[in-house]
Length: 133
Image (cartoon, rainbow, N blue to C red; front, top):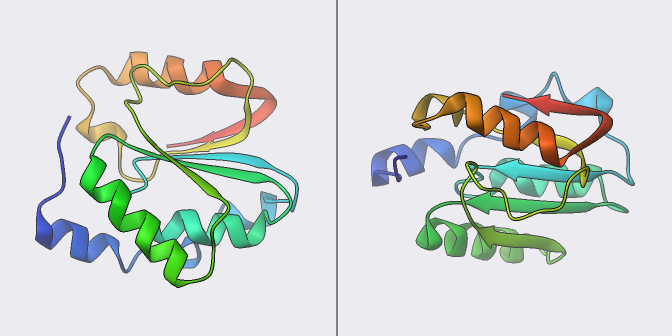
């Protein structure tokens, strides 16, 4: 798995749900539980929280310094009800059937075992839930 080069992190800061996950927006409801894997700077994650304001959003990334950047970004926007967690998609630290949506934007190509990553995503997704890779 890779981390983020500063130039890549800068580009990812321009990614918002509207320009990077627009296909998913009509499916979001205010009370959903959403897992954003590889959240990077947290820009898409913050948009998910705004759209799922009665639900819960968990931001997961393998890089602790990037998670701190994401936390600061969302706090600056006045969003303070996102759970930030450092962890790997290859061993998701969540119970089975926990999330309505599991989102992994530009992640799978960086994973050493993408099949196992998809199995883990499936494991934590609720029945009739959505996995977006």
